[in-house]
Amino acid sequence: MKSRSFCACAVLVLAATGSIGANLAAAQGEPLTAREVIARIQVHVGIPWQQETVDTFKAGNPDAEVHGIAVTMMATLDVLQRAAAAGQNLIITHEPTFYNHLDKPDELEQKENDPVLAAKRAFIQEHNLVIWRFHDHWHRMRRDGIEAGMAHALDWEKFQDPGNQYLFVVPETDLEHLAAELKSRLRIHVIRVVGDPKLKVNKVALVPGSSGFAKETRALEMSGVQVLVTGESREWETVEYVADAVTEGKPKALIILGHIPSEQAGMEECARWLKTFVSEVPVEFVPAREPFWAPKE
Ligand SMILES: [Zn+2]
Image (cartoon, rainbow, N blue to C red; front, side, top):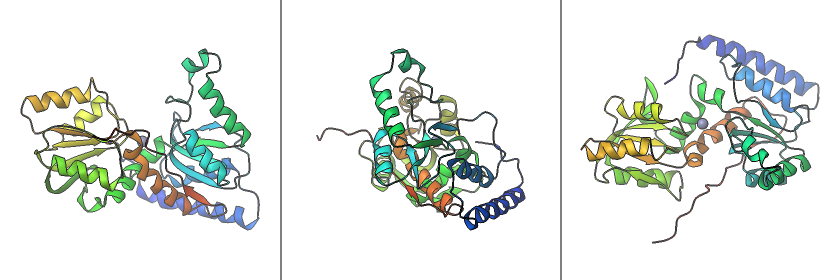
């Protein structure tokens, strides 16, 4: 689902250069700035840094000294509060902070200082937080970091297709049991499923986050895939498409985990990765809370 045209040797060379830089800074006892942490990440991703990317600073002073790093799936206010209380002032978030992909909530700001947005910005300022987004490159690395973390959390690495990291051939089960297993392993409160609960499934496409109709349907049509597991999907696009496939008697199904649970473990993986080349300050994974709940039956 993405190109892999670069040479793996380049990764090793760049990684070695990065750790030399890191050791020098540490040896000289200089304070570590947010900008330096990000420069180190740019070296370690092992792919050329994109010109057009959302992986940029979103708030705070990049030259501020870092005391602790919080790695999270989504920089909700709740996550920021927990990070600030723990003394972490650099927040590395996979998803936006200010409610849209480019972190430019124009529509909200036209409402003249939207109160929710204003309170969040005030909290960030008061606690001198620096927020940086790590989305595009973490996905585009030779091994998609989100996919790797999710496969690890599910203990599905052994089922991963060697030729396509998004495809898994699991022991045959039915849709109902597969959904129950995902719900319990990822500790999700609200999970939604489209399809026949008794459908036999063994080929699963795991496409975390929100990838849109084209990618979602392509995944679903890939070499005998019966079920697409994703984060969030438009109900009048992919959900309707799968419902129609089911009505047509096709062996297809959709499991919607929710965006946060579908990528959360991928950022836990990111915290583990970051610790391999940032050792001067504590690095901690701060899980974002699942926003949904459902009434008991
Ligand atoms: Zn993502």
